Image 1 (cartoon, one colour):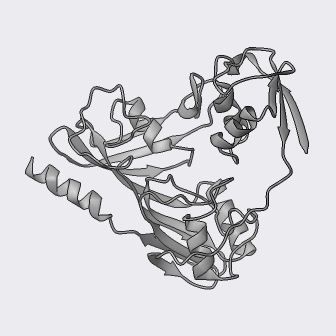
Image 2 (cartoon, helix red, strand yellow; image 1 turned 30 degrees about the vertical axis):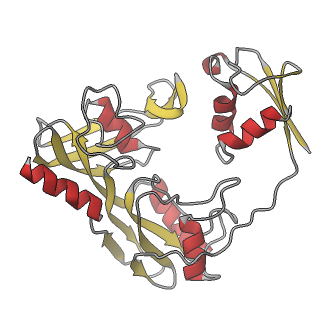
Length: 309
């Protein structure tokens, strides 16, 4: 058993306790904490509470964690679209709806399960057994290019390139509304949304510096096809930045509401965003490599429909 105790800060009050704790421990799921609450393992001011309890400033929260459960992450024969591969790195085209790495209680069907099967024992171990080979990630419903590292040397090298923002990352997406400018840059810090800590937002007080460059490919009726270049890589960066200027990504069910745009395309399963190109210096050869992932079929079908509107 592991007991942890902490005090709620003024900036964090007025949040459901299950959501609040999940933000503090992102490696564990919300359902994990809901089970602990239900079993009386989480107390506030020495009293058991329900999952909908709203935390208040100076509340003392006590969490009784069970002994660590053993992760049961197994290789799974899940098809992968390989864009590039050698002895050190692998670049895959991640499909829509696939989670990059497992989380507590959800150890199957992820990209990690697939690359474990494909790479056997050749994966970096720096991020532990839950994220072997994973040096960066993209959202579940974002498709496209993702680097996987096969050894620790490659992992450290690529991670440093990402840290200093030298990895070339180009995305393509469809946003709601027409863009008036051909090009633009959004320079606004991104951090936790103070009103909903499960979301990110423009956060001048506590956010981290974030820069997104965008270029209009084509305006359609009520929509625009846009290319993005990331100068930084914050969580949900393109989604938050575009929503902040009134052009949320088509299908974005987290940041797209409240902007007055109707959705003419049903069953999109999240944002229409594709990690088109990724470029990096090979950790061993020193050669610059640039890989592009083809647009997924669903994305191409939307463009065809926009052409005819």
